[in-house]
Length: 424
Image (cartoon, rainbow, N blue to C red):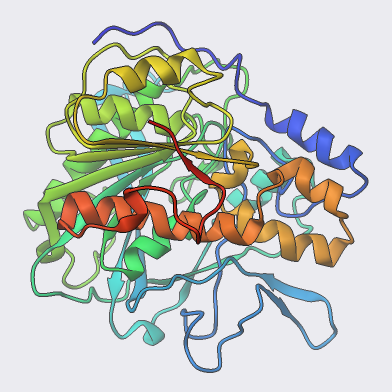
């Protein structure tokens, strides 16, 4: 594989975006004015863990009796399955920890899966409290200014088995962020029967190991983390998934795995997606690892330049790193020799692929952020359409290539998504 070295010179900085939004006249909570190279949203939760359950709130903003916002909620998934989740503390003995010589490289990961009996299990937070506070401080807000958002995942709930093991998808987050940054997409896939594994890319993520301090991204590049490092993390996560499928527990603390998880993993149907730097990592991992059958990139800069042909199915979805403006993206496109699609989101921003797309509207209502402030952050594309794009297109892509279920969404423009442009 031929590549050039990675730099972040062309990725919009998180503090640049923060300053631009604050200049629009309002401060935005939950990091909604944060980095473009990483996501910033929160995940939704209802009393039952499903936004479509009878009695659950339908508004994306829940309010306490005092009228103050009790919870910002991302749009609920549309599938029939409840969602379970479990965290994993992993150690890659094949790689040294760059900050702790003589020790192996540690990682935090989560597995999300269709669940049963979910109501008996607690709802998972979007991040651990300390990590969330560090993240808030990192994007310019008081660390204790907001409660930790919740997800629709239920911690440790047993796995809902299907007629056969379920396809597995690995997710790689953006630079300087956290494995939760596309919870909207993750929960949508799980609600439709997939198992999704996410990973914090240590030293380029807000993360915390059990019993340890909160770690924040290294913005000084003292510990450089390239897309190739992200790809190595994702491939090691697949190794851990293989361990689980074989009946072993890779969690170094031997935290119990959900009942039914080992037999639910289909190792012959594995896909991967990623956002920004994680999108580039997805391309690299899909090239390097025969286990990954299909890859999807959300606005990946494709830097370092990739000059190796890829015969597997791959879809590129872009907003800022377009083929017309990013030579690396165009170069990578020419090396896609199998099934391929290139979709450009007109009027979107880099951050439109994150949970922030669903949060900006409710947050703007709560804070009085005007339309100009909203558009300076997520662009002119309708936020509701942006959320539906997140829910529809990744599902259609993986359904086609991991389940052999064709979708007209992948054949050409759809009147339901006027801002999704197909480019040959």
